[in-house]
Length: 170
Image 1: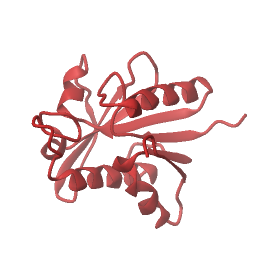
Image 2: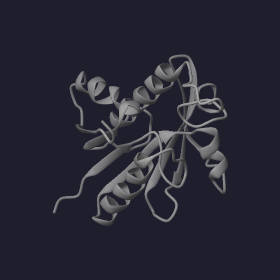
Image 3: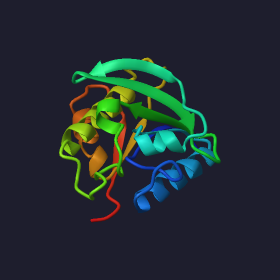
Image 4: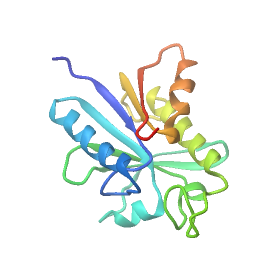
């Protein structure tokens, strides 16, 4: 069996941050693929709660600006595994109370479109090895609406990885 480089993109992953079943899949599938000897990297936003759940704050691997927002790529590993996790740290968009999608009053963040557009743009840059991470996936696996623009944005690229898009709750 061939081994693949897979960028697994999700807005939540257990045990770092969880609101529903997506977090469970985002934890178990990358682990299973890693056990099958695939080179899997997980990418998700660095929400306040997620960073607070880490025992040690990871160091920035890359710092840049996207759409005027400072962005740092932090690296850690998925607890209980050796799967690398890249956290997209942009405090103006992700460092806030509440869950990833809603404020403390259960109202959607008014800038969710902007928050997840930035996330998708970072996914595209990671997929094209444009951020100096020295790694380029062959497959980008996107999950749910929060990563839904990445396959469309990647489709505009000449040299792009294959994409998979999974909808968890229709």
